[in-house]
Length: 221
Image (cartoon, rainbow, N blue to C red; front, top):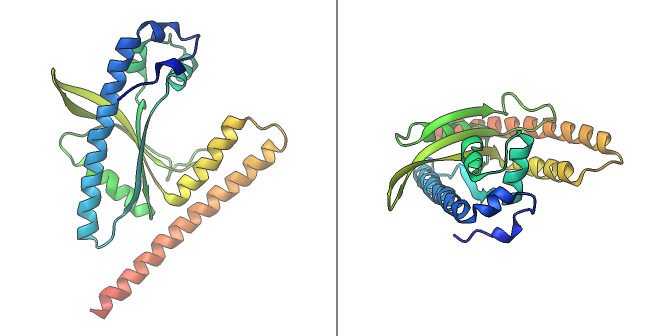
């Protein structure tokens, strides 16, 4: 994986001076994503056969950019170095799993937690306990062993599991946060919060309707 070093901000001298070390570390996070995506894709294939439908609609992944890494470290009050990046950030490697229904989210999380080589570090359930702005998602920080030429290394990765509707809302909220709107920002945030509540109610209703349909199908056999 080639890391674009020329996008490192000019004020992050320490990471720029550690360019070779930075590339090495980001390579490890990239390989962690490859390993974790494979695990999730295996689960997806298994569930598509066992459940006669695939609860996983989409999988996407990303590595934090150098500017995002440096911005987050400064916000946490740490010097921008490769060492601090590894020590304090657990979401440099990220995977997002989109599902159709809320109960699929918990089933996927349960299956991942049952895997012997997946160490769950933290769990944040923003579905049962949404953020004040209405954000909902299920977040896991996991650590998995990745086999490199010099042996196994534990590498951390953030996994976000959410419904398609939750992801649609989060995309608009992200645009709002980063565009730093001034005019009507309070009104927009209020309406976004209302949309989040409506989306959650719809997600729950769709899940209940699916359960009713399945019960009818079972009664017919």
